[in-house]
Amino acid sequence: MDDLDRKIIQLMVQNARMPVKEIAQKINLTSPAVSSRIHRLEQEGVIGGYTVLLHRPDEPTRVQALISVQTHPESREAFLSMIAGEPDVLQCYRVTGSYNFTVKVSCAGIDELEHLLTRIQTLGTTNTQIVLSTQLDRPLSL
Image 1: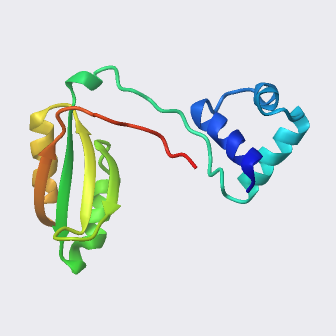
Image 2: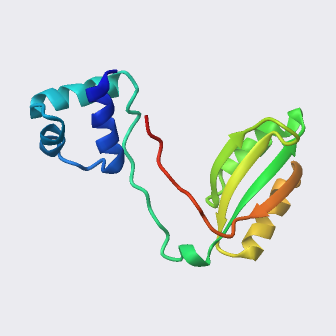
Image 3: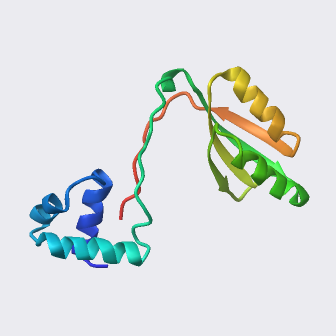
């Protein structure tokens, strides 16, 4: 990957729907050359896919939380299966420290968060932090 590839990726991170022609103009390459580079980056796995970020219409009223979870080794698969089926679970990280997972959730309200916590607590211990506001939210970059 060279500097031109990095510039293409940075432009695509800003706007994945940016036309190839516009990318080509911004980095002084031809459209076919940019298309070829994008295709190669996809084949190499550098570009892993494209997605749409949806914002829920009721997002300001939702309760977001980070749940630290400590499971016993025999409960881990059940825990992972359970959260995979939970639409309020946004992300799950395997982490080091006192807990072995951190789960990011967005629930319709505090009652839904409590219900989800009760289900998780059947498989391990938890420590929950409710998100008051997001101070920084940036996409990955090179």
